[in-house]
Length: 291
Image (cartoon, rainbow, N blue to C red; front, side, top):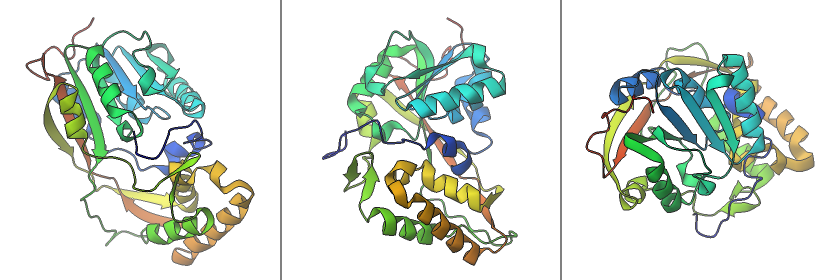
């Protein structure tokens, strides 16, 4: 866990309705890369740990006979259920409100476990060890993240870039310089070095796969506001009675940069790190096999 900070159930309170709209999507080729690498064929079971509103799990649902999403936030689970209904996969998806530390929670075994930029919020040693035991022989854990070293510009695109630095500065004026996280603050950010954690838990690897991004996106002022409210550090409840004032200031800031209210952006480049329990010999061994 993060030193000096404890998880509480307000971490993403009120963020769920904004998450899907506010966050940049995964690189379009991510499902195809995972399908090819893991030899997925529509069978097997997926567990997405820290699933949020089901963004990753639903994009992969066609590759499995069943997907299970686990998240401690009730709003995220409700949003995932709603989106699963819209996508026509309610019968092959299951959404459980629970902390990752409460696994295995009677969920059985899985062929693939995914963590989509969620692992850092957990007691990582405990969760990694538990998930390893929940994987079937030949199963794999996939940790997915944005490549932070990627530098993209909007040169040649029709609108200016989102002024992220100015937005962050405005947010700090309302919430303070320390990074808020639920009822506490993160003085030193979230932990890294997932590789050491997963090695301690008994995973071999990783095999790294980069999914190219860079495709053009268009964002609106409402999209940027949704991005702010999708973050744990600026979840809606943190603003209290000053939320309306913040939204008005944010809209003015954005329209000063782009009077049309439109911004250009790029799809991120994603990295998937595939790891297998040390007892396994290959992360493509029978991964797509049915139970």
